[in-house]
Amino acid sequence: MIVTRAPGKLYVAGEYAVVEPGEPAVLIAVDRYLTVRLSESTGSGRIRSGEYGSAALEWTRAADGVSMLLEHQSADYVFSALQVVESLRDERGIPARYFDLDISSELDDAQGRKFGLGSSAAVTVAVIEALDQFYGLGLDSIERFKVALLATIRISPNASGGDLAASTFGGWVLYTAPDRAALRRELEAGSVSEALAADAWDLHSVTRLPDPVGLELLVGWTGSPASTNRLVDSVRGNGREATTAHELFLQESRQNVDALVTALQGEDADGVLTRIRTARRLLQQLGESSGIRLETPALTALCDAAEAHGAAGKPSGAGGGDCGIVLVPETVERRQILSAWETHDIRLLDLSVHPPQGAL
Ligand code: MEV
Image (cartoon, rainbow, N blue to C red; front, side):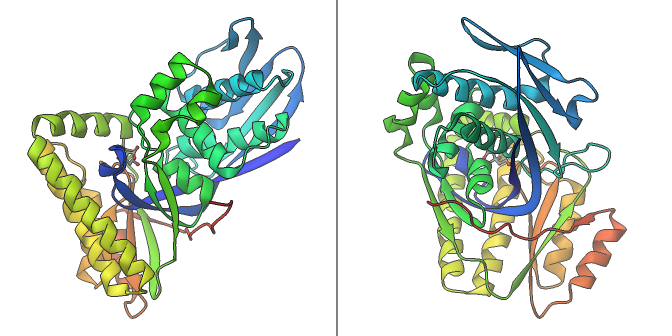
């Protein structure tokens, strides 16, 4: 049996801007994991996950590629990863085999509600790593990340891939996305191998950043899940009409991320806190200019409690629910923030940063 696991992620700054190719964001990987167990099978394959209930989804292979016998929406990312790796295997002349995938996740609560820690990205990364080992493809971590992004944009065309980068490389990362529209065209017109070598990757980069010095990470969960695709489509749709406001947002977000990177590299805790607060303001302004509520009342309470006690907080990821991320100076009592959260039913997720992994 092959066992792989991939960590969840949080956005520290630059979400929404990062969906534009070349615009930067900072993310962290966190020590909650999604695990994939792969075992060889015969005749067909099965995919099992708590998300599909007791049904095991069956897949099979025909002349025109692999197909599912029973569709299930939340299996989309798993199946897309499987299809892209199967194409790559075929292109490399490696013989086909059947396998079962068993998926278990710490990125949901006991009732199956997602924490907003990037479970689609984590399942994509973990499935690709398992299949890489199974077929002996010998992909390095950068290639696995690229295969994961190709699989993801077949399902979510606008996804930046920042969460895949955090999940693949761990630690703190600075990320910019490639031109996914061009990558999709490459995929439709040619092979996965060609798409992996395309010029469309030029704007893409992943760089490691140091952990902040003198700051503790606190992550609160509001209990309400957000739909990333819907929020991104709405914000971008309105953004195109109000081009100037969106351009200004991109420019300010870029400046803020650059300043955050400088503060992290210079071990400047106050600078980091300022940039987290600015990241929150930028998301609030984006919400106002696009008419989409990115900060729910629970997220407002979560971030306000942090700011009231000398820390800094912001929604993480798409906003509209899910998690808020807070950085607390060592000199501040976290107890005060946590008791304010309790009165708003905000749950502390006991998380730390997952360490860097894989060569960049
Ligand atoms: C969602 O977690 C972050 C967004 O920037 C979307 C993306 O990067 O794909 C809103």
